[in-house]
Image: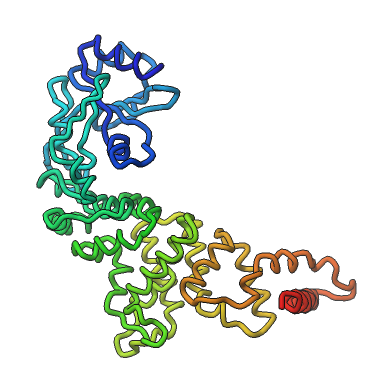
Length: 410
């Protein structure tokens, strides 16, 4: 149905209808608006279902329904109020009777930019907490002290700052810091959901910097917090410690690709430096090996997508040696391994460029070269060869082809 018919039906049933959340925020930002989410008040669940018998309920602890409006599946929630009853995001008592007002619903939300409603059909803006002004001033501000009741709001505030290039107010930073104890006990999947979205920011380093400033980076991403203060040789890393270097590489990769797997590999490429013994600093010998252990611990704490893990493990293992190879056989093996990793070869190069600068020709043309090398098959080996002899023959043929291709590129 069209939105006008949807709203008219609810109004006839005695309800008020509002668009809330990201759509309103983004419209005020002058950005492309997200899908619409609706909140209704003044109507009970039974009456709503009578009006829309095909609506599908998806909410568990409180009713949220999917309704097709203007050709899209939209979420429709009932205005609700919340009362903190226990730790974490499950520790809430939720009330969603017809008597709950939109004002009460907006008060329970995280930041002011997300606490604005647009009433339909009039188009009247309900902005009780100064969200419109905060958007205009480019700041992330908590609605109230209730911010601390869901600890993951600390990550959401940092993510909003990263996505929109906003500043977080000092009062909100205090609230974020107050989430620290409960954040340490939050399910890994909730932390990961914020990580995935934050990596989509134009400058994703901002997310981690705000978490560090709020004093919660070490309880959400200890692998990254461990990099702070890990000095590096000044001649190679004038940007500062391993954390600063990682943030620099992350933003450089983000400028080249929107692939979140690539951005995650940039984030993870040097995580082994967080476990470098203090006596070894500023050098980090063997951080590639330690980095694989850190990645495994990260995955145990917060299950990572399989393709993210595989891509990150390859980059951690190879990022130091890949641009420095001189033996043709090792170059062949690297290129053939790289094209099998669940990461675009161009993304692998983006991480290496961000870390090292200019790259050798065998990497610049690596994807093209690997495709040519794969055309050479062991099936073409002389029939008298067996076992390892075939493998040795195949490598020798591919080395010759590599050398010829590189000669052509000069």
